[in-house]
Length: 268
Ligand code: JDE
Image 1: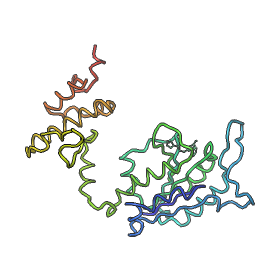
Image 2 (image 1 turned 30 degrees about the vertical axis):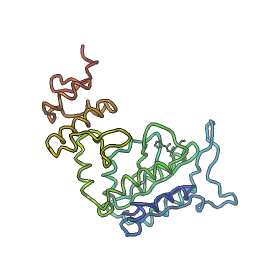
Image 3 (image 1 turned 120 degrees about the horizontal axis):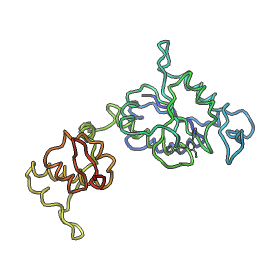
Image 4 (image 1 turned 180 degrees about the vertical axis):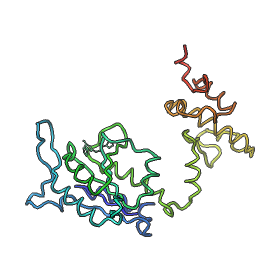
């Protein structure tokens, strides 16, 4: 896979030389290129921003450097072809569609991704229109909060996508296990020593009884998800829950009514 990132702080992306993603680059599984937007300016001060039309606070990123940088990346794309296939341009933005594991899987299947890191109040909207001639443009949010720029969002997305590229993860079994995570949060994990700071590892995990261990872990997943992410519980398919699952959910505030999972406090 080829990935291009455009930023006014290219040093921010230095973290992508490290760990799993750094190894994938060295092994040529990932061709990652970071570009300095200021290299596409022509004035003495390498200006990338200007005041907003219509007034308002802050500054807006000028279109010309973005147009030049993105045109260059599109030209070099291994994807753009006569069939109308386009590379994907991801624009981190609090106003984007929310990035999740499903989107990570989709993007991991692409040949060429580009990321445009905005700063200040954002990028002149005409850049996204212009870019859509050569790219499939996707404004994407990593959550409902505001960052100073897109760089940190790109670090998160490249890590989530990069680890799904075949060969990047040493132990592909962990990916298989992950994909079977059935819409619940993970169960808690423990390792040696068996007693630490007066705290014991749950006895069942030492029992060797695999049926009991599976039930214990499943209960922990259901309890955690009910407490921390009740929004995920109501999205579960009730027909996939056994008698034990239903009992655990009941004791954690959820009922099943006519095949639908509902918080008990919403019952009449
Ligand atoms: C991403 N959750 C939050 C991007 C932006 C066009 C392009 C970019 C301060 O205002 C911003 C911040 C950012 C950086 O991304 C995030 C983010 N997921 O904050 C833009 C706006 N228009 C503007």
